[in-house]
Length: 608
Image (tube, rainbow, N blue to C red; front, top):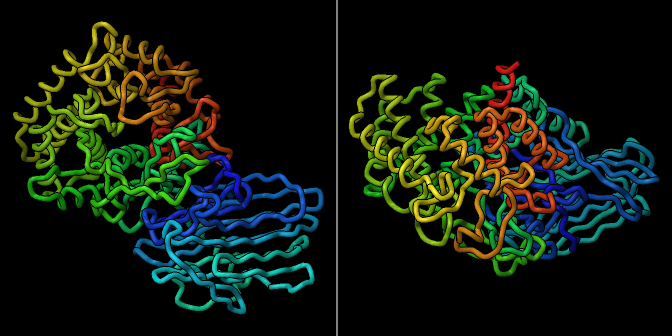
């Protein structure tokens, strides 16, 4: 248990209120409850010795393992293969519903497919990031780990066979047991948080009913997708991954279910992503509507409107990110008692970037509202009134230094991307007002929109680089600007854009993978380097396609698909070694994959 598995060697399961990661060796090493952004119960992903884990794996034999999802679902199967037998562990979380609850369940079923295998169960929770003392209560059909504020109950699943080869070990820190199973045997554990009843024996039939109900829920949901294009399997897996990272009671999409997985092994770029970024969630509207998931888009837009309504008098209408319930407090702290993934400290929880000024978020928000409006999801009178307040705020504040999309910690700059998305905010607001005949100070909005356009074209374009640059005081490139033609700011055939794309090719692209910027040339306040940014690679595909380089775009996209995990999941970045790094799985990566696949399909179909 002291060896860290690769980040990509994990599967994600969830119940639409929280989620768990399970590695190829059968270890549940990340689980927070009762919400995504709650303290961890199992955190071995960030400290293998002290974080806590729940492992089910073969014992006393050499084996290889692989993982797969039950088709059309996030039900995870970890398969163990040895000379003596083949066994599987099936993991799932029954759907928790759309009302916030403290009760969450993880079903872990062991099934012997062939021969015999000896399996070991080792459960070592560490509540509240390993900071709380705990006790263990033994019961005839299971156990209860308890702290002052939380508990998990382990219910036995299947017939308990007491043979001479079985053993049990219990203390306040952990529970271990092992036994030999034969072909056809089914057993396991049902883990339950905040259970009101003592441990009980769960029948195999009841467990199989949980499997069937969970399977049917996901397949019914997936049947609503309209996508029938070339990359259906990857698109559907990405859609399910986004759904797994959506907090059902509010519709808020988290950036990732993990915290502090490093952007470079041994580096300090470790952040908590278990929150809802306005930027990420707004981009998700494009992906969801592109597949036909209207209800999810509508629910997020309501959450967005509520955040504008909740804004304090005199403050910006939106902040960068929120907790899944919409609360704005995300104070950042360091867990000094954890070493971090593969020793990559510090381990941070909370995120101080919530207090930054990032003006681009208004562009992403208004762009999603415009797309929804064109798809039939019109704003109410109250919602439009709040949106106009946000647009007027942009008119007053767009022309100032900010931290930018990449949340740099080296001081504010006049970022070109922030200006670009401020232009988008005003442009989309004007479109909605004119299309729907809504009351608005369109003259003021248009004046500011045009001022932004002229400023970007004169100050954002660097003659020496023959390219649009990261901010006005530098000559560095920024992959975020790949969005310029897709948002309609510049024609993809414009010479200024064509030269920018060539410059990005030369400076930020490494055999189809794209760095978001060069931190050695453009200091961001943190030491070290990082990998290529998966979202930027997908943006690059769209930019190539829009510029007429359709064959290059398809090849780049197909190459990017080979960098996914064996389950079709993507983290935030790809390291120079090709391994996945950063928080995992990453919503930005998956929503960008969906949008890129839909748009590339459309362009390829048009060409043929």
